[in-house]
Amino acid sequence: MDLGLKNKVAFIAASSDGLGKAVALELAKEGATVIINGRNKAKLIQTKHSIEKVAKGNVLAISGDLANKEERTSVIESILSHYDKVDILVTNTGGPPSGKFEDLSMDDWDNTYKLLLASTVSLVKSIIPGMKQQQWGRIIAITSQAVKQPVDNLILSNSVRASVVGLMKTLASELGEYNITVNNVMPGYTKTNRLLSLIENNPSFATAVNEIPLKRFGNPEEFAAAVTFLASERASYITGTSLAVDGGWIKHIL
Ligand SMILES: NC(=O)c1ccc[n+]([C@@H]2O[C@H](COP(=O)([O-])OP(=O)(O)OC[C@H]3O[C@@H](n4cnc5c(N)ncnc54)[C@H](OP(=O)(O)O)[C@@H]3O)[C@@H](O)[C@H]2O)c1
Image (cartoon, rainbow, N blue to C red):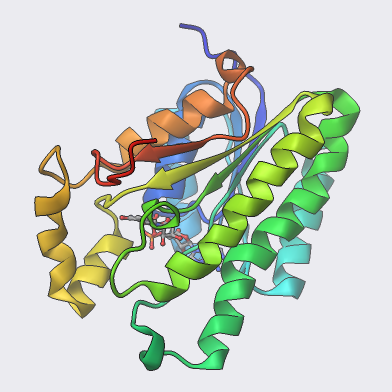
């Protein structure tokens, strides 16, 4: 299947490692021009080189903390100074701290709002004018299986990510007439540093594998394949959906 991704410009937020990196690599392999981001410059440059080794073409790397308003503005300005428009926007950041309600402060809640919701709103706001003008666009949010079924010890993620899904579903209605699709992808337990650090802080995360019908954690490449399809020309009639890549962990019928 030709995914129709050649020469599309894709910005994958928080992509120097983990799920974002796997998505950037897969899109680059399909011929998209990718822009990657992360806070740590050295790691970001390493990832740029590793993607360029595997896929043809240059990768643009722009460092900055997407939870920080000033840094985010500078990331966006830098993207738009290199390209007139972004065809594919994948929103993402690192995850919020784990913990139960009484372990967390109001600052934790404020920071999580900035990390998950404000970063997504702001990226979408700056990228949609170009998409509307060309009457083509793909917006994909990376959230979590937690938006369908709360995960123990992750109350910040369980609560604030639900607002990102509300945003995505509403944007799908508002932007459909411009041929912009908006979807949400929900990773399940996937082998990245985020999962390793959750397990390190709380070993109960390791036993979660028993609750997964496929009896294993996912690989970032398996997650990236789903995002790449949704970003493609072939997914032109899929919008407003939430796709789980969770090995069957979510137990809802629909
Ligand atoms: N892996 C899982 O099992 C799983 C399951 C459900 C949901 N999720 C969620 O999916 C998202 C990605 O997870 P992951 O497993 O890929 O995490 P990861 O392995 O920790 O990678 C996170 C990536 O994002 C960058 N990053 C983190 N915070 C950032 C920020 N504020 N601004 C810009 N870049 C930032 C990191 O680089 P720097 O540190 O250099 O910035 C790194 O490149 C997270 O929100 C996570 O909670 C993951």
